[in-house]
Image (tube, rainbow, N blue to C red; front, side, top):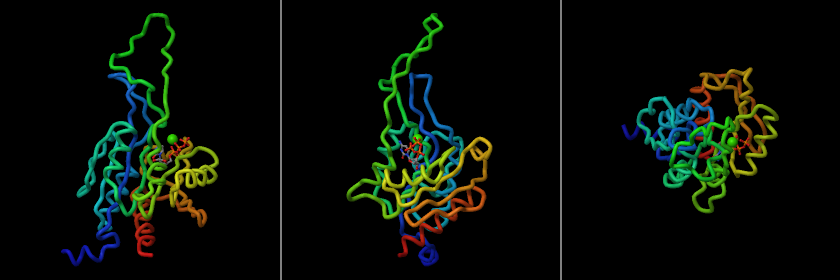
Length: 225
Ligand code: CTP
Ligand code: CA
């Protein structure tokens, strides 16, 4: 069994993956969130395990079952996700597939916000969340050898992806067009481009499971060199 595992491309490697949305509480009954099914991130975790890796999956709230043989750490908010990711390091490969909420409440209420009868909605004061990918990307000692982010865009896909690659010090950005017309959000298929410092690769439309297997296969090649 061990000999068999030894032949798998990611045997002996630790792969850290984030998946799903984060929920940022407004008060005890409400939250801010991104739209994310977690399908792509969970598929990556399954693909990394199938390739022989030890896998840690830090997941926001999703309805998907946990992939088999993967250590799942469930979190709610971006702050919790960052803590869990830092605690899971070191990793050989990190793939940040989560749709992290960009903002949270400047101060989270402990009481439910009530309508005051005036018809005027409350003003919610927000503050920016930590950028998990950028934090890991700029880690002095614990930056994974291969750091992969995602960029879901509706315009200027490649330019935006390149900007994120640089700002966050990632190695690859998997960029996907999530314009409503593509029907990608929540679906089983994905059309992505791999944006790196050596250029842009257009991948054909394929299932999220196939996107995951292809990313993992490419990542394993990088680790070999
Ligand atoms: N990301 C992260 N932490 C955040 C925001 C984003 O780790 N607080 C990661 C995502 O998991 C993804 C990548 O950064 O891998 C790009 O996320 P995206 O939301 O596209 O980037 P932002 O920098 O938040 O830019 P935008 O204004 O387009 O939302
Ligand atoms: Ca964002």
